[in-house]
Image (cartoon, rainbow, N blue to C red):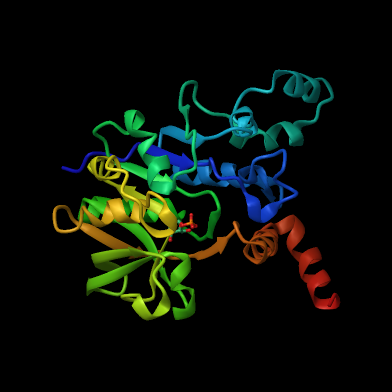
Length: 289
Ligand code: G1P
């Protein structure tokens, strides 16, 4: 019997320096792709995977993220008064079960591993998912749903992985691989941001994880890794050999929205998926250069 996956941690304390000035007074996770902020894509994807409880690891200047999922009484009353049913319907995805979102603060930016450790009381003894809202995945089955299904098959830890060009291994957590059936790959080792010449493979982790709570004990040691930060990858590496650990080659396309090009590509790809926008966007792309 696997413990059901019901909790997700969303690290959202980052400064978003790559998107300044846009992120000077707003959270980078509030940047929209078409008309929906990145954080909402992440929450909706998690819900589609059966997640019921959310913990945002926030920081200063991130209040909009919490506001976004609150009831906006004046706005809703005004829209109702004016019979703006479409606009009201657009707010649907922002409605959450009372008490389903909690926040903790990461007071100092000591790394992703430290951010996850900050959510330790929320995690308790349960398996949990992590979604990095910067990574947006366009797929038929939501990416975290695919991971949750894989977790039910294998138990233990499962991370979403994809092949990257060798010269990009220094941007990601990279797997040393064992048995590989083309979909699920056994994780034998994990290295954070290795130089191409030191990388054990070109299979990289994207921002979707299902992890066992034991990772917290390893993160608690606060050992510094790549970039002198407490790395989640290093904490996860300590679980290998003690618990099942797999990489899942998910179906879908990932957009790195923490990067300008990735973000722009996501705008186009997600707009092309919208029936009311697709033709106009396609026509524009054909004529504009
Ligand atoms: C983080 C992780 C890295 C992972 C990446 C996915 O890096 O540390 O292992 O591959 O997310 O997006 P960051 O993007 O925060 O530098």
